[in-house]
Length: 441
Image (cartoon, rainbow, N blue to C red; front, side, top):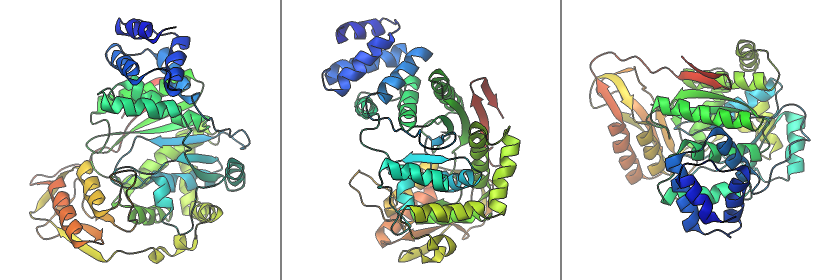
């Protein structure tokens, strides 16, 4: 088999066989096929696209390129949740304990953040002593005992995906549904998930800005899951403004604790209940989302989900007393309100820019080597549809550097659009995608 022939075959619009896909993914991972030939293949795929079978085969070739985490020692159906990323997206810290308290095992492999705020692991490390550094046997033991554990993604998880993504990033071939979907799904499958719930964001703060494209991506990923025998559900959700009010690591952890106490923002609570309901159904704990939702609401009312967060943090070496006493978390030197320059209704908040304002403060990483300041960030006070008067606070900035605070404040003010006419907030849940099709709300 020659790579030249495969490039020409795909360039001319023909279908690649399973063997041909395995050949080029395996050869590239091992360094036997050069970058320039795989770049040509990515461009051929970009223009000629892949069908459902080819996309599923590409996904599994990437899964099989490295380590596949064996979670067979965990009792019950292992359901994973994946978000395509957003601003203020702290769902795992709420959803994990809720779903675990309802009896479905949450065995999650997470990464660190690169961008406006930290990833799930960075946020959890706000609890002093918390670590994801444990052997797989300990991880499995924790899930069987507490129904929840979060581990760090190993370097050898879907290495072909890492190599292909780096190449796509510099050859203008990122934006292809088959390539995006297979990249996301390969990591979930290699992480040992038996069922997957996908939170596919749409809007200004999302990877997919257009709603129709977000539904297409969700469908592509659900089709991959179905093809490789993983029950998969996609939920398309709004990211035209940050989720909840907190953007920044410790601030988001505090908001997660508030939510588990039943005092969280309405949109964040609703999203966690929606995603969690599908996780419980896929995990075999509930017959439908309505029954599942009632079970999840009970974990908040009874405080069992809050107790589960404490159990989980403690089991991974963290100081769980911070859950009961969030005031123990570090507070930065500067806490200042950002005041509106005009009166009116908030029409829009550019979520990307709010993320950038948090990044400037040090809440995220500009490069992999950047050190995160866990204490800094932004608390929004006004969101889309809210009325604001001139001089009223639209947000509070938490900072450790005056100059960074001033830059962040300017970005934040510019991210808001305020108009005279009354505005209705966006619908949070746009629709659900299952193997049976798309249901838009």
